[in-house]
Length: 323
Ligand SMILES: C[S@@+](CC[C@H](N)C(=O)[O-])C[C@H]1O[C@@H](n2cnc3c(N)ncnc32)[C@H](O)[C@@H]1O
Image (tube, rainbow, N blue to C red; front, side, top):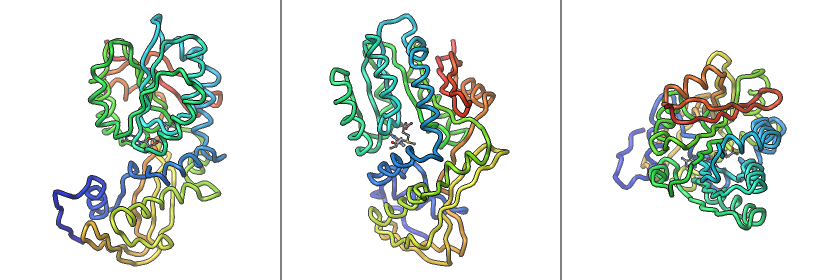
């Protein structure tokens, strides 16, 4: 089970080593998005059970003008910076409206996945040929530091898709605080939060009938096999997801169907799994308004305006730096 950590170990390798050496075992969901993972996530967004995309899309389609007024706030333009932009399908709805209103706009989508960024830039260059686009491939935690010195225009940071739900409460506050550090008084932060609702609806979103979410999770084992020389037998793991209404969190796991040992070449290590031992993969936190308010306060923001879909499944919350 032990491996010697060498300085050459990549961050991915180091995180896999730490996760599979701990108890309970875990793997970080931030590694889901290799090329195949990004493609599978685009499939997930189209699933009938995955209501998150449709709910946020409804907000953008029905309230693009209210959102525009709140972003522009009496000024003439702004720099839109999107963290973890994915394929940008929903953001395109906002940008189309902003451009129709004659906004002076630049758009910087940031994503760790080149496949997602290629899909986005391909679509946007056709739909918005005159848009000032500044795509950046990389980890938003690293790119954040370079955002501090903008060109003096208002920055509007977008963090959509309830991506924040993949962080623990403590990580969320740290993340929002680090955003606050690169934001000026006039800048805004627009965050998508999936709200607490019928637990059956939430549970189904993470365990769809077609098994796409299962393939999305299992793909991380394929990635370990390919990039780190692992010998995971994919047939020997089953995807399991549930929703805990008291904590308000959906959780997904890969469970070992049998007692087995997996070898990972790059880690020079064997990892023993008991029969039915779980590997914790992802948390997807669901929020109520009290939680959103306390998150904003704890990280030095105040809520300027909230936007909801008709079913109140989802909230896009617009924050400014606390005065
Ligand atoms: C759940 S998807 C959401 C995409 C989009 N925001 C939406 O609402 O549809 C998360 C996206 O964030 C990207 N991502 C995850 N962690 C990242 C990181 N640390 N730095 C940059 N991008 C990241 C993934 O590649 C993926 O495209």
